[in-house]
Image 1 (tube, rainbow over the protein chains, first blue to last red):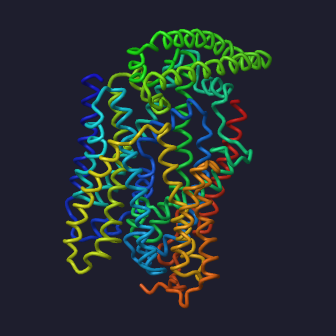
Image 2: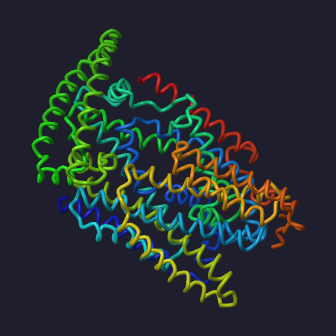
Length: 567
Length: 48
């Protein structure tokens, strides 16, 4: 990175952190610290929801995923708008009316303390681990590409945000989310514009999409029904619906965002706008990845995008074999570039025969490229003795190598800001759940408001340290965005099942739902272990199992009286 | 479980923008989803 890039990076981060600290000034009580006094308008809620969900992984992994796998990942979000509708109708009015701090607080009123404790515990386990991954994902990539020390990068990625999260709580988080989303959006728009600008002179934006499309990268929609296919319309709508409903309805990092709305209407509107904006935003991020793919059809891409692992293999006995693969890869790419130009010309002439001919040749060359890449990956695994995957490195490598000075700093700031946005909300939610559901409820219930604010600050700090610690020990998990979603899918379905029983099955009591949840969770983990189905379906399976088991247990072992909410 | 006589949210919070009621807002969200799927399909077939 040049000095100008460093200046842009440091100024952007300093501006956001200073603004966060400035917004941290007034926190008179626990409601102010954890819920921003429930005073925020809908656009704060929307942007805060989006900033929480869109972590650094979104901006690193998604373009890389589009590069390797096409745009089909967008289908993952098809269930989100429907989930927003259900949340607006059912969850938001209940949570607001009961004036809860956390989603799990609601469950004690409906069931009992044990169920509240179980769901809060599952959340803390899942969120604590996945926040560690959220810190680690950009840190490992930035440290690899920029040569930064991984520990320091983890501390920057997970620690800077503590400066305003510990002092400012929910209000500081929401205000910084607003700015973060603005800068992140601007950065991605500029990146997309720059990719098009860097294409050969006679290749336009639509030409690039035609080239990528002919090579199968604009595969946005797949109507085939296949339980083992991760991304198709049905897994997105059905599995995605349950995942998003669980995530936004029962994960405190999101519930805490829309509970800051100044009224039921403002919280609803915030969620509704998220339902309208999320899919187009994800589509555009994936399109940047497809444009990067098109760019590399005219400029030879590296055989493997993670240079650290390539450097490592050069020091081993496999160096010669790897160089041979690189030479083969370059030869195929050169041939491919010629054929891409032929395709481009055929497209301009609207020569259908030429287009089909080029498409067939490019298809076959792409198979050859994938074959060489696979051989290279196998060689890297053999040489380096660890899992290798370069999906998360593709976009950043492009940024570093091709974007002009200054923009590199801005794009790295975008990745760190995205990370800070989601990590800040996660810290706040971990603190809310620990203090409200455990400390205040089970350990000390008679202290003053200021005492709980002080404890919340220390707990936020403690979770920050824990998550950075997890980040330090996170292993390499392929596409990080998938790793986080897989982890979520193991727990979300079960927690959602408990909430759906609470809302819609009034005859089922606390004992049945508790044991239903325990058995359901065991089944979900077993299903994942034996690779029964693609991970998105685990949300549905977990949810249905909890409801089913709870209903059966209630039938065989009925509780004499069912507790009802009295709060 | 909860008070069944929840206050009318339209009265409590006003109406959503652009439409006349919350149910219309929900219909709009689902309608936009369907429209997006159709547009994505057209996008895919056009460029493939």
